[in-house]
Image 1 (cartoon, helix red, strand yellow):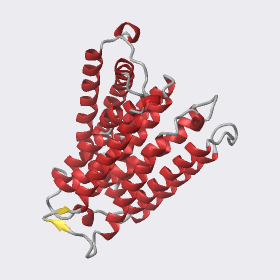
Image 2 (spheres, one colour):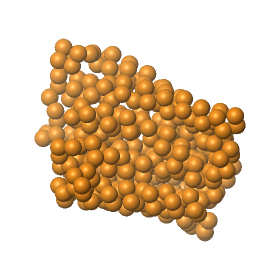
Image 3 (cartoon, helix red, strand yellow):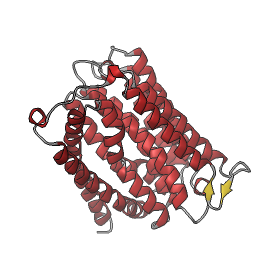
Image 4 (tube, rainbow, N blue to C red):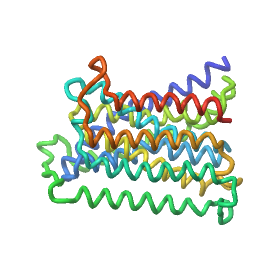
Length: 336
């Protein structure tokens, strides 16, 4: 019975997020059509913010109530690599044309900022136990810099998407089949369900770690990260099936940027000690793996490979999958 209860709670979390995800996708598509915003921008900002709410609530509740900083850090960085390995899934689902040939090269901008931010966090995890760990009270001086870099990334993406050649025509509600007000209400309601479920996840993760005898850094990086990334998975697959591959990729890459914002907020919320100093150094492996995967994503966007092994996955997608599996095994071995 002690095994059934935490896994049952985990299943309920997955069910709630799974039901809210498709509603969020359809709402985002309607908002894009009614406002003239590009699919990439809606995916990058609106969908990424909503689908990343579980990481936000999980991280804050993990460091304030559950006192589990490794769950918070593992969830955020684990979500990054989970989001990037989803690109391999999209490639497999894109049967007619490799996904790398269906998406706009403008995503290189977001992926590049992702490498900068994620690598920065990986370095912070390693230097936090040295004399370079400058703090004001319990807060690292580097966390405000992460917030600034996130704002710079969003500003750059905004002005890039506002270029005349990237603006899409506005449709009226008769063509879309729903008003902007109704689409926004659905967006807010589905985002609220996803966020509330995310607040429950760190406690479920700790219970599972206890009954299974697993390390909390491993649980945070794989189990909780996979659960909180379920909205990205469902929204991304839904967007691809709707023929909006750019919205799908924008959601994944935007979620990675938001995950780094969450880490900075976790540092502000964790008052026990230095957040970066108490988490396992093994999280740096996850951060650098995510940076490598984002680099592979940029290669795919530029090179646009067409060959597939067994007609299923291209070499970029296979490389993403390999890095994900190796980093997961490393965090299992060396985490605490």
